[in-house]
Image (cartoon, rainbow, N blue to C red):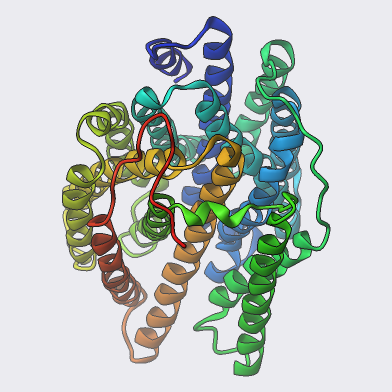
Length: 485
């Protein structure tokens, strides 16, 4: 994968040899950490059996990963302003590698979960670092093409992850997934130490310590509350309390950032939302990540547990769609530079809605090719969504807000993914349990649960279709977008 990335970066006009090297190193590292993020999905069933945990518990390996990223990424706006690029990269790869080793050696579920949290902390730094680096080095006229390359990386990696895990599970246990990733993380660390250079001018920005616990309580409370929905063992008062803490803390975080922005001390500068194109892009991105991550975790669960397909088969079924999304990334970038966002995004968003309906019709006798085709169409549609979203969101901001915009985009991606994961799994579990109580077989009850989840996601996706009608390309070069007052 590194060679195609290098070739794609080399084609970008205006990049010096040093700049190409920096972008390539961060792109390859981002590919690896995202591949790791999804590789575990196919192994969840194996972990459930080996460590004796249920669906609700094992999904925290995904939800906690996303939640940790949502908590850490807002801090990266501050971190990338005051830390040299070289040091930020080494910190990210060190945390990722350490977390991978912990997961590989963990004797119990709690330690696997801890290792995933450490992994996520490194991944959380890498994603905004990539976006900020690209925005600093690539000229506005060519950002669509470069974002297309980035879309290729962050699309192919999730596709290869489940397939790679499926191959590993054929020959070893779920620990083999982490054993495979550990030396790769170490190689990333060594290459970065030897060849990564700093491209930024760090500034001393004080860290507001009150913002950090507000971030943890805000996003943590909301996502944890979502994971409790449908659990009959949780008292309603506890559920309301968790949501209440999350909402209040998040409101406090927003208020404090707006206050600190007056003296240029915000941990996460929310003045980015004064730019209309950025705001609309972030809303659509949140909905897209909810949909994408919900499908990514749902399909392996129902294909393995309801249709009884082996992990390798499931991984191979999901591979063509992910590869297609990646291959379309550069194409979408060039089309964006020529036509803008709306002609690409509107048809794609309508197709995604149709696929949600199609996935809700899966039965025990549904042919495998139908699922593969549906996943490929959805993946291709997302390719025409994500490149314009990234380009419009960050391209609509002035240079001094790049790091904060990257942090917000990353936060929204992960919170949206965590929400999507929690909602899909909760709907699946709740409806499946109700169906089993009515006498349905386990396989049938799982499909009933998935039907509710997919149809509900399609209903929510309607808002994304409407939002794409208001998408416009940013003005190249001056970043003077219409602002919200």
